Image (cartoon, rainbow, N blue to C red):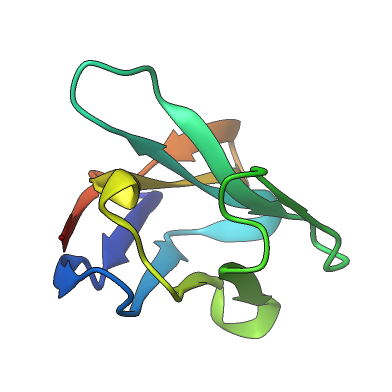
Amino acid sequence: QVQVVESGGGLVQDGGSLRLSCVASGNLVSIQNMGWYRQAPGKQRELVAAITTGGSTNYADSVKGRFTISRANAKNTVDLQMNSLKPEDTAVYYCNADLFSLTNAKNYWGQGTQVTVSS
């Protein structure tokens, strides 16, 4: 079963740090773009950061300079290091990946992990 699973959310104070991790598993042949999205209550899901297989990155303006996305291709993982967190970063964070198996090519979402930043 092909899937992506996140971990690492939690509660942190304003200015604190958290690291989110995501691992893709299953009968995978390759993984293309990977990224992190977030959805706050009453708001649309938005891109936080994305990374290509070659390591090129893209960040939302609101997180530039504070968040860093990285991936380990050999481990099928993508991480999001979040520093200088603000209350407005509070949201459910979702891992997203383009996964290629022997029988399928599809975009996958994780189940989400809650990040809460208290003021």
